Amino acid sequence: MSVELLDTTRFHGFRVRRQIAGKTYQEYFSLKKDGKRMRGAARAAVKQQAEDRDAVLQKLQTKAKAEAAKNALFDKDGKVRGILFRMKTEKSGTRTPVFQIGIMSAKVGKIVNTTVSINLHGLETAWQKAVDFYIDHKKISKRAKVYQELLSAQPSKAQLDAMKRKRPKKV
Image: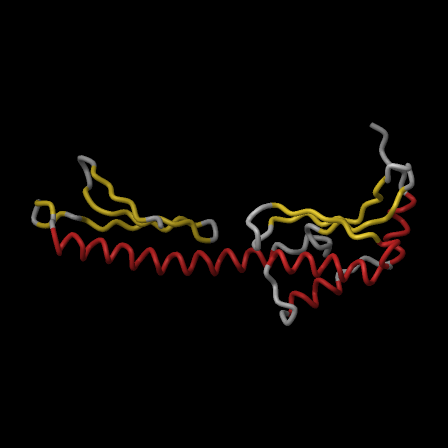
């Protein structure tokens, strides 16, 4: 909750403040009437007004965050942010193509990582598994239009072959 009691020489009352889509919304609710501090029921009524306004702003903030999260799924090239094609070097030294997923999970509240082997599952199935992991942690429904957009962003075989031919950087 972002309702804060301010008690300074210049103001006595509640401040409601939230950031919504990069813009700060800030409103003040005074606890003074006729130069005197409010007490009891009058004070409780002002506090309730401030909390009601905060609840409205919280809904707007939640909606804006969800919208921003949807729009941030793809980068400027149309690739899915958080699903990368990598050539994983095994302990034996062989290089295996994988989809590496690393995202902030809305499900568990922390960053989650996994890899899906393209050699083991094949290109289409590996992409499907990667996207399913992604939407599970981003809390996106399989019925959502975004899900179909994620599936259609699968890299082509030619793109993957070009990546395979790149030599690993020596450190």
